[in-house]
Length: 167
Image (tube, rainbow, N blue to C red; front, side):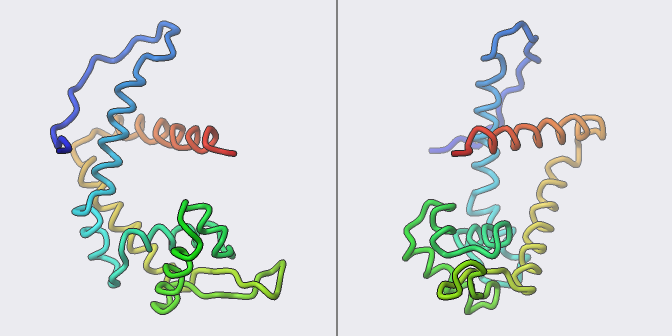
């Protein structure tokens, strides 16, 4: 069973040149954050605000299209680590919902790429708004100073993960 107990606060580690200082705290905190933000309860709360029956898997496809369009279905499958036939089914569902559209591939006109529609952009905006509400509720008791410290450090951490994760 997954613990829902908050992580214990620990004293601020003092920099002494040890690269392992704080790694365990960061790791445990990231696991907890990911668990909360990807939980079924959180997704239901987010999805309720979209006005669609978008499930979590198809949301990830829609987001990947929004961030990479125009993009071939095979590239989407690789990006999200799923089988191309699974990706094709997801794209077909999103296309029927008019959230994405297939367009001629700009490089190979015999192939098609997937792009997000205006309706898909509106759904993505509503998802962002719902996530914003959740995060705002979490941070409502934080001081402006604490928020100001967290934001650039969290952005740096995300950027560094992207850097380390590159092929």
